Image (tube, rainbow, N blue to C red; front, side):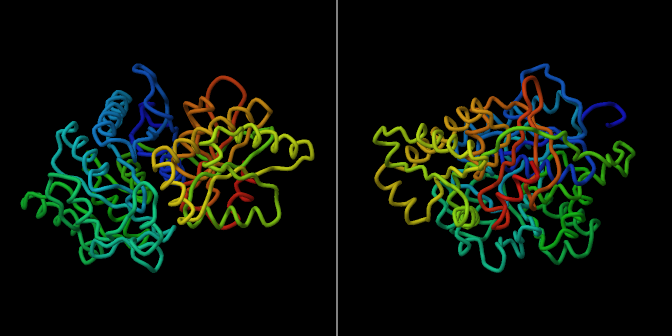
Length: 426
């Protein structure tokens, strides 16, 4: 732990899988990390090197996202945190109304600071930024499949333009040319940008080495915004000032006993491939949003299906994952909000029933789905364990009652056989 037994780094994530993704990075950097589900009650004290508050604020109204984020900031400041991170998706999931720009502005105002960076790069998972343009693998963001996202379709790969449409602050760019020259050059560029009235600057990064350098360059900023990759270079700053000792066993978790289930709600390319891989050889049950809308007992049928296979010592996948065309067809008939709500509500109900049936290991695909499931299970705090795939750690519920192990996966993350790997890890 830290010398003062107080958290050093306070993080605010706009979805639950993104929070575990970020926490995973900090644990790998030797910081004992605890993730909370929502903002804990005032006066709650948690001993850790880093704290990550997981919100479900990515797709809600911007003013609500701002309010929740400020509440999280207030609690983290009360924990003694010295620096803060606002974490969003490595594909910059947002709309022209927000929520990245409005939340970043509000956090800067609350911290009485005048500058921060925006860097969603995550090279290990193929997200890189060059000249302000976000790439997913070898293609631009708007050619990656994210242009079909049902809630936050990303049709512009230029993050400076995207962010400028969300904020009244002036947005600038820290180009790769500067990043390659090292931390001192970045700090000099930050000074130039501030003198030019820039308050938010997109930072290029094409490798983990760039993220480590950015971490060094931003050590004196009160707020840093970005994807989980930006956390790579932050633990070293606290060690350099003797505030942090590397925790060799930061990722250790006790074993969890009980049945397991896989729940998938994401419609991303990665999750579609993972669902197809599982279905080729293992039992699965599909959640049909149209059947849900007709009032059919889909959730109960899914639970009955799982129980039948538990009796044969088999693990099942229960999924609502569909192709982009199928998603659009359902949204056209039901509406975007209703379609998403029906699926999340069904998977949350299924999770509660399966917990009562003895399930203690949950692999969940999709940020919105993970949020719904975690809330349904009453999980309030998670200890962060070892990495399963880049950006996805094993976690365990902390608190009273029987332990529950979870792997909360962002829709776009994980190898094709992720579900199998996650079950083994849990």
